[in-house]
Image (cartoon, rainbow, N blue to C red; front, side, top):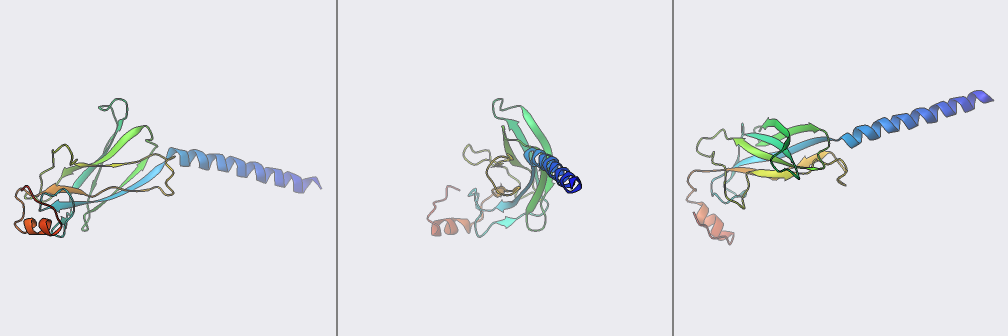
Length: 169
C-alpha cells in the first residue's frame, strides 16, 4: 500500500521542482525582436507608397538605465535586414528597469543613408524587454525605421498632398 503513495509523493515533488525551474527561466526572459528598415524617398519620416524596404541595412539594440540615461546595460546586439527589409534580434534577460531601443546604424544605399536628427523624429524604435509586461508572447515588434534620401523624390509632393499633408521639402 505504501508504494503507490511514495510514487505519488515523488511525482508531486518532481512536478513542483520542475515548475520552479520553469518559472525562474521565464522570469529571466527571452525575446525575439523583429522590425523593418525602409528608404524614405519623401523625407516624411513614415512609410509611403514610394518607400522601399532595404536589404542589408544594419540596426543595433541598445538598453540603458532609466535613472542614468547614459549608462548602457546592453549594447552591440546588431542585425542585418533580409531581402524584405526585416531584421531579427534574439535577446536573453529581463530589462524591465531599462529603456531599450533598436537604432539605425548603416544603410546599404549611399543615396538613402541619412539618419534623422530632428527632435521629434527619432532614429530608433523603443521596445519593451520586460518579462512581466503582460504581453502573451516573447515576440516584440518594433516600429519601422527609415533612412532618408538625400533629396526628396519629386513625386512625393503630390503623394503627400493627396494624403492631406503639406511638404516642407
